[in-house]
Amino acid sequence: MEITPSILTADFARLGETLEEAVEAGINWIHMDVMDGNWVVNRTITFGPALIRSVRDRLGPEVTIDCHLMITNAEDTWKQYADAGVDIVIAHIEAVDDFPALITEMHQAGIGVGCVLNPDTPADEVMPLLSELDLVLVMSVVPGKGGQSFMPEVEDKVRAFRAAIDAQESAGGRKVKLMIDGGIKDHNAAMVAEWGIDIAVVGSGLINDRGSIAENLTAINEALE
Image (cartoon, rainbow, N blue to C red; front, side, top):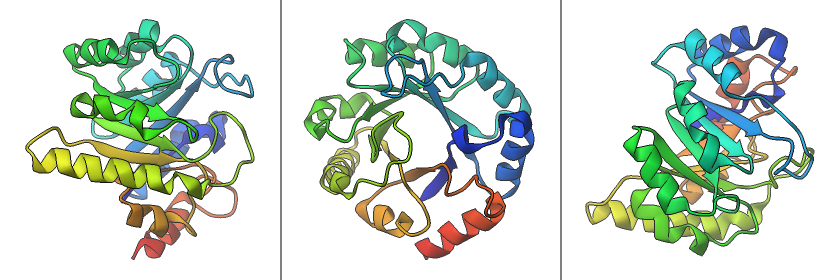
């Protein structure tokens, strides 16, 4: 299972150094959480395309960057993030009116497409899109609501996606990455890996004041062994 850091717990005054530390520790995927101050429950504003462009310029093309759009107008603004240098744009099934059309537009622009669903959104909302997606992100906390614990009740949803993705690939269809985000740390990383997760987003479990990124990543990887 691959680990990708969410940068929201980083000190933005030294974000460049933190990201380079992550890459030096062995991270090759960066997760960018974009909140517009409207769609998420705590009305937080995080950052936009300008910061993402700075991250891309700092890290170069070798590192995969996704952006998780927790916003109301992904259909109108996704191109700004593509132009900023992201590889994959992840939009919420709950916030997009015409997801098939969005997939078509992004693929025509050469951008990977991810679909994310909240903990209380059933997998059936996304399953019909699976043959066209590049990534499915299952939230294991409510987006934008701080201080939450990991929600183990998403297990059945994750396993349903794992089975459907494997069946699709076995039939010669598109390979889809399965990602989880919310409350992932060294104590539960092995559990979600066993569920079939390909990529786990880790925030405070990776970027914190209790140890270096390399030390925290080692603890997670040792838990996965």
